[in-house]
Image (cartoon, rainbow, N blue to C red; front, top):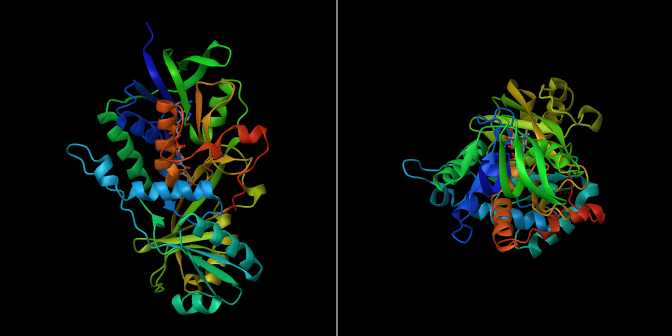
Length: 392
Ligand SMILES: Cc1cc2nc3c(=O)[nH]c(=O)nc-3n(C[C@H](O)[C@H](O)[C@H](O)COP(=O)(O)OP(=O)(O)OC[C@H]3O[C@@H](n4cnc5c(N)ncnc54)[C@H](O)[C@@H]3O)c2cc1C
């Protein structure tokens, strides 16, 4: 007889493990949950290769609410995710995000700031003179504005969060199965009956959650669904510098370059030009990105970075939603026992608590109660309704 579960989660990265944790923590659920993860060491999973920053400074209410819910949870990780003999610690730090804009960006910064304020987040808008005063190491000559979030923004240890969700979910009875999902058996039109495994087994299930990250487009195709989520490579570079850069927040430069401290080192990256970012699963590091785009941009913005030494680099995959680069979360309208939790496009680490809580409630109660995830529904794609979020 094939094993049977109430819920099978495909992919045990931070999203699948967050869903597993919240489901198994909810006394109203009480079902049997399996997570199928083919790479138990998470060597290629985005959750291992992430830089795991969190910001509140989005331009739309749905994403701001995801961040607000998630930072509250991340601040309580020790109480929520510790298990006997193991104290959960994700090293959360909140030095803030500093987003920089040119003179032409002032109006858009002001309108995003108004949306953030309406959602309860008070970012400071700074003039070039104020930026220069507060950050004497910053070149402000071509800046028009900066936006700084003084709290609830920063970074944490992403792999530690993934392991904490996973460890707690297992302690609460979730079964992790090291195998690859190779097919979905339809029990009836629009209803999945079982998940096929590469080992030859089958898992009967009431609900399937597609949390396969950059690979979730392939899982959706197994159910005949066209999901606009593709792998997009992002390269991260680690460097050291003798320069003194006091009180450095997470900086989002006008060039698209991002940089932040990591202990006594710095890590940085950039959204690569489209022709440099094919939609495939390759993980080779593009060192030209650093030499030709990132370093010149860093040295321009923070002259102290002219003197730096590149130490190492790695590449990982965004699970990129080509429709509107925001998450796709919720029940599929035609395959109604398939729930999507993917397409976070660079925000899955920070939004994993909100996504996990919302999806678990959708499964348990039929709707999300702690946070409204309906704006992220799959239906918006067919209806051509974009979440108009600014791309960073
Ligand atoms: C370089 C980089 C920097 C980033 N920086 C940030 C950041 O600062 N802040 C932020 O919030 N987010 C960031 N992200 C994005 C974030 O890491 C992802 O959104 C998040 O990790 C997605 O989690 P996931 O669980 O959906 O995917 P994953 O961690 O990739 O997990 C999906 C899992 O599914 C498994 N799987 C796939 N197919 C199958 C199958 N057929 N059978 C069984 N298992 C399968 C895979 O092995 C994988 O472990 C970054 C990502 C990268 C690459």
